[in-house]
Length: 306
Image (spheres, rainbow, N blue to C red):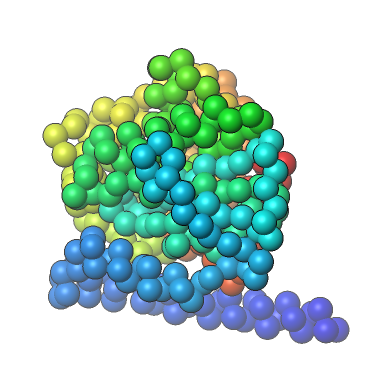
């Protein structure tokens, strides 16, 4: 009975959390873009502040270390550090925001499940640092870490999924080591204005819409062609990719991008698995200690690596 009561309370809190966030999205988008005109720098500051309300499980820790000239957050749980494996997680945020602190809680969850360190590169952000700065930083950190003994796994979510796919493509082209496994969470793989995700504009379960994606992508790609595989990896080759796992919500903005990515991976004969949540908010992975679907998805991700 106590377990059922706990589950009912947990489900109630999760539903109320969803309701509040979803109802606030349309207001937040208009407030941010049309009234306040919030800049990427202001959004970064806001996210850093909000992240303090999501500190992660007790026993987790975040420290910082420079790897290949890039400041990186190193997350572990209770000091456990399996030297035979580690994860490099390229965070999302439209290439313009996001940080190790914002991802601390979900990284702690994964560190506990995998019993290893999670490395979060704080790559340079647009618009101050457009392409190729973010991918150069991501690739440099990964190249340094993947040379360590044991297995290096690579994760990218949203814009970070784009960077993760580009990192693998660059590794294949340069003949450098690949990740043992790759995970793409709601990856933003097509930065072209005509992408199906932009056309469908499913913004109810995402804190942005197609006007945002066009604006953020233009600030990131600069003078690059939007169809260039170096900025839109969906137009590149997936041949030679390691075993890959893709997660997405059926109702979020990047659902179309993610499903197309799965299809292209299969066409390239990559061993690919996927997990689709029926009704989750974009970036739901960030709060595994609050949302049941986030906890479920992160556990599936951990099982994939294990």
